[in-house]
Each structure stands twice: as C-alpha cells, then as structure tokens.
Image 1 (cartoon, rainbow, N blue to C red):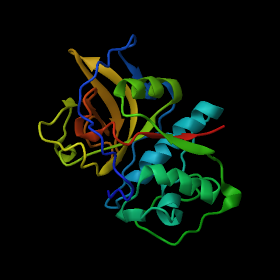
Image 2 (image 1 turned 90 degrees about the vertical axis):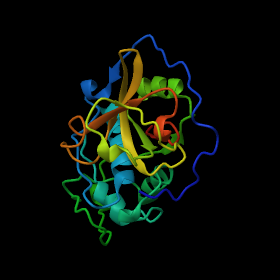
Image 3 (image 1 turned 120 degrees about the horizontal axis):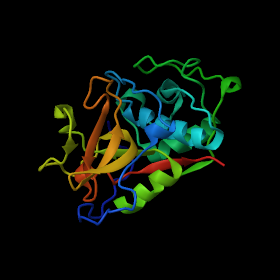
Image 4 (image 1 turned 135 degrees about the horizontal axis):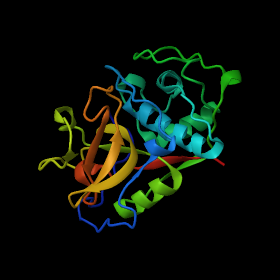
Length: 232
C-alpha cells in the first residue's frame, strides 16, 4: 500500500502506561465486525480498512451490520489510487463526495481496478465526516471501546511472517507505514498489552485472519494513522 498523504512526523515510540480498568475489549463480541475478507493482489487494503470502520460505525448508529462495497472505493474514489494504494484519512472525503456507499452484493469485489459504475439509488450507508485520533494508545483504546473499530495502519514489512501471538518485532520502522488494517479490540496477555487487528489477507492469515500487536509503544507505527468516520 502507498500512502499519498503526510505521515505523522513526531516521535511515535515512547512507551506509555496503557493499563485500563477493563483489560480486554473486542468488538467482534458485540456484533460490529464483518467477516474476514481477502484483498488479493490488489493494493486495496486502504479500502478494506475504511469500509470496516464505516461498517462498524453504521452498526453502532443503526444496529444493522452491512457488507459495504470495497470495490466502489477502488473504482470510484478519485482521491486514492485504486489497486496502487490509498490514504485512509482522505478516503472518507471521497466517500462524502460520492454521496454514500453501496452494498458489496450490488457492487462486488473483483480485485482489479475498473470503470466506476456506482448507482446512487442503491446507496445504503452515508457518512458526515471523519476524524484522526491522537497518537496516545491509551486514548485510542478508550475511543475504540466507546465508538467502535478503528481504521489504522502499520509498517507491514514483517507481517507476512506472522503466524500467531503478540507481534513486537525488534526492527520495524514506525515511520515506514505501508498497510491499512482495522483495529477491533485490545487486551493483555502475561502482562503484555496488545491490539486485536483485522487484516484483509483472508482467514488463513495469522489468527483466523487477525493478528495481535504490542500496544503502548507505537510498534510498527500502529498508532500513527488512526481514523474513524463520523455518522450523525
């Protein structure tokens, strides 16, 4: 994935106390997360990340968990670059410009860029704006619990080697963010705080399509670009 927007330049690495009263929270247990999907060879992780966030926000607003169209973003979001990458903070602006989102069943995923053929009469979800969260992982955890799964991103250079457990690679440049994901929860295991993150590489990846990453010191830049849609 290529980020065509500015990367946060301040130091992301100082470790902070992320201890919370509730050591674990997982939006999968509350109905706000759809099934794990596979982006294939298309560099559309940004679309899966943002759609996952909007799905969660729409669920929080309406109680309905919809399968919204990633392909609509790949084809019709002219602020991003389809299968060549995108930048989630600007994707929300593109959704507002389009006016809404179709169901994936009406605009199914193909894994390649195509001609935009969205049908505004089939829009089923809308957003009113978006916001970027502060770098503090303690604040991010509080916000996640309060509002739903969050679009996030990280340096994924070591992620392809992930098989399970809490990843905290020794060498992982937090400024080299190159892959967008969906953070759905957090927890603590044997004193190690972690994030629960949904990937878009299919269910065979990691822990049934998910991975856990150390929480509290900006590991791999996981806290650097955390965003959410606003739905009123």
